[in-house]
Amino acid sequence: MSNKLNAAIIGAGNIGAFYDNPSSRNILTHAHAYTNHPGFKLVGFVDNDIKKAEQAAKIWGGSSAKTISELRKNIKIDVVSICAPDEEHYKILKETAKTDILGGIIEKPLTDSLEDSRKIIGSEFFKSRKFLVNYTRRFVPEFHDLKKMIAGGKYGKFLTGNGVYGKGFLHNGSHLIDLLRYFFGEIKNKKMISEIYDFSRKDPTVSAVLKLRNGKEILLNAIDSRHFTIFELDLFFEKARIRIINNGFEMREYFLSDDATFKGYKNVSLGKTTKTSMGKALYYAVDNLYDAIIRGGNLICDIKDGYEAQKICAK
Image 1 (tube, helix red, strand yellow):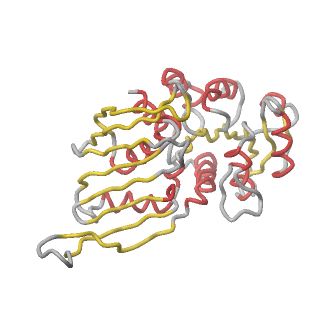
Image 2: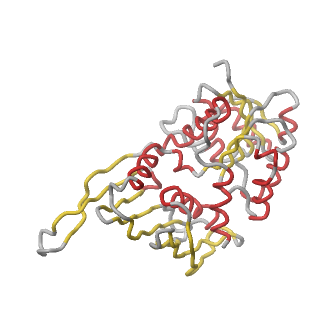
């Protein structure tokens, strides 16, 4: 392609490089997404632990370095993926703002501090570039379709719902917050019920009640991630029930039916099970980034979206 962009990955960890390999069916890493996309060339990895950067480069190609400035000495970099731990995001973003790159992908959350995230979204550098935040499910086509069906009234009015997650409200719970914002718009009120510390002393996993703009409520349930990992969302409408399960890899639609035992009662019966393309979400994310930079398209989840999700978590 004439408009091929050079991509570098900052943070040679699991989401950056090691959740999958070049022959994997699913695309679960930034490295796999860039190397599969015809519009990008993966040019290297940056990590404080140079051995990890070297190991990633051995698998995926490109160079390795301890700092972004070191990697940029001999290589032109157009975009970056920030896949470092949450607490390192702000420092890396500040360093990134000293470069001439065109944009990139920031693993959620935007930063681990609401004040620092506010500085990022207020920065002229980031306002003038194309940076998206990887709230993964936003990039999955089946969830785009679900959003349209909710807005179009296929399921009737929303009644209530609940979500289950673990490993930090900001780190993982913000995925639920962002997905709810994507489906229903802004969250108007929130009330914390309890908290557990299964991930970080700075980021408890919180059970809470959220109130949507239509006045309906959703309950978030915290699960201790040291026991098992889960991400589920269960939504109830006038005409249907929608379950997003298996971390978003599967969606089930249930529709109203007469109760076979008790006359006059209504149940919901499974109507359709969809295996989503969640396994290619990162490919769709880098494709969205490419479209925004090269063709001027809209980012599906920009840094303002990342900030809004974080703001709800902070409150």
